[in-house]
Image 1 (cartoon, rainbow, N blue to C red):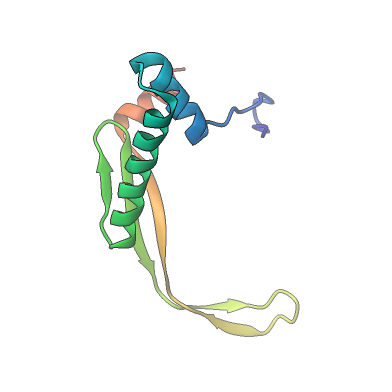
Image 2: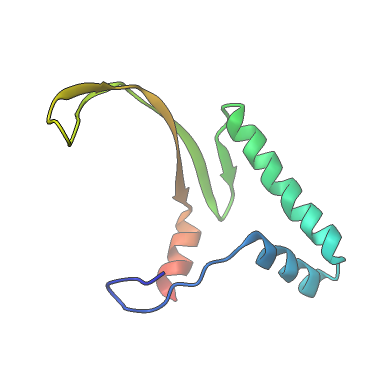
Length: 104
């Protein structure tokens, strides 16, 4: 993926990268590192599905927001239609994370 403004390639971090870092830095086995990472993500997923907001100090907040039903338009026909309300997940980085990202 490229950032059009800076023309630098943007790297992507995967779960595998995270558990390999745990393996390298902490010395857990690869399987234990993978299980730990998967457990953390499963806990976050379960809490979000149970309508909890997730706040990770120094990292950011995963917040659930309810969007109201609204009028929209079918782009093919131009006819108005009602778009159903829905729940969306948003992420807000903490000021600490935002500062670290912007300082680099």
